[in-house]
Length: 351
Image (cartoon, rainbow, N blue to C red; front, side, top):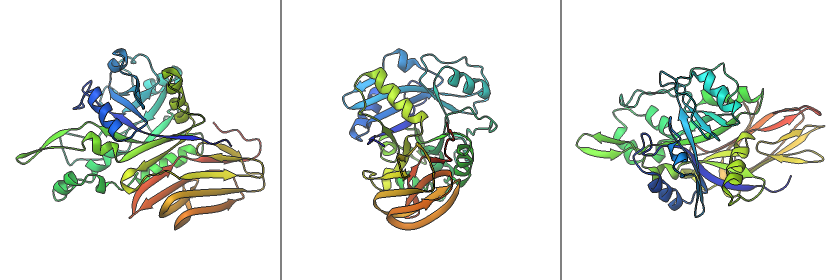
């Protein structure tokens, strides 16, 4: 296994092209201040930013443009990337999931298990087409969804003033669904900021729910690339989309620390693989996790926690196939969630 280059970014955000409150240029400037390597816009039902030439390099920040699709009932939101034109407006979820795939794009279920009722102005938009299996990935952690789902009339002010402290991590129900699907095929997991910069009135005081800068300093998606990110836009776009399609990604919450130095790999007698990779078990494999600092560390196999300890590093030997991932928590809240490594029988193929 050759070394990978790790890039940190933010997915799922909205600008004034749809229901966001800041312009592209304002959001790009904020992302640059936050030290991100890439951001991926998903304005609702439009690729006008792409038509306007907004996709590209801005100094050291790569800006990619996708869009968020919904069905006729404004449910089943779907993040689509790699498309040059929007799909017809009246498609059902099965239809647009299929069309995104047929056109070579990347499709991700957005806030699929969303449940909330604290702010009537912002209702939930859950996924309902759970029988579909042709999507590429799942947004297992949506920053705005979790924050809103945990609001009550008693904690509202505190959570508005301290939004980053309130985030705990993906729900157990979505992790279980992801693990189940990933035992059949590769399924990507990402974290989404779902940034809008919504303005809300709390009594006499106008407040912004999760300013863009706060969101860019919280949930991030990190990508492992086989080479440096190209300065050529088409090549760079393909590198990002390829890493996502191949599950070469992990999620972090910056509130609990930087992730420089995090690694997760599996070794057999001949080879090694990292996040998103496929490796044969032979007689056994050794799994190795390294964190940049101590945390509550969990090693998960086929959806079940098999090792749990407070540590900075972990090693584990497995004699059987399975899909493995890592969770790291600090103060009981999610810090790092890796995608799976796929350990298979000799000769088995896994896509």
